[in-house]
Amino acid sequence: MTFFSTPMARQFVGFDSLFNELNEMAARKESNYPAYNIAKEDEEHYRIEVALAGFSSDDISIETEKGMLKIEANKTEARADYIHQGIAQRGFSKMFRLAEHMKIDDALFVDGILTIALHREIPDADRPQKIAISDGSKKIATAA
Image (cartoon, rainbow, N blue to C red; front, side, top):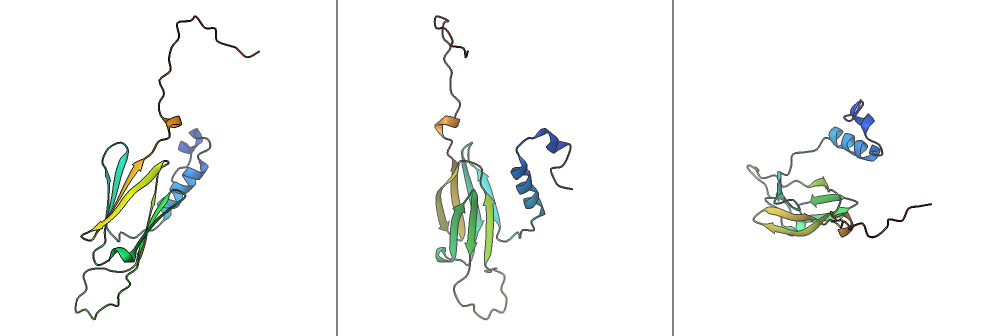
């Protein structure tokens, strides 16, 4: 049985790949490390903040491909002999699925927090358009 099974899925046509992706994401076991926030600044601007204490910007890579944002980090320095190590510095890979038309504006790494600014860039063809109403003096052509 899938997360999006009947009768809900019966009402949607052509959403197979979306339902498959949601089912895969629901079944995926993902680590809570590193901690992160997702903030919505307004209708078109978002921010992802990732806590990366102990990493430098050279240890971190960010890339997007086919609607997926992937953040990876691996510590490059040799580790010391700790008596107690409470700050996790293990490597990780964190993925975020981006909605259609989402673009990365900037990525900043300040005080151990990686901040990625995103915005939704809706093409003009997809924006609402005002339709002018004529006074009836023009005839509407009909197909024969």
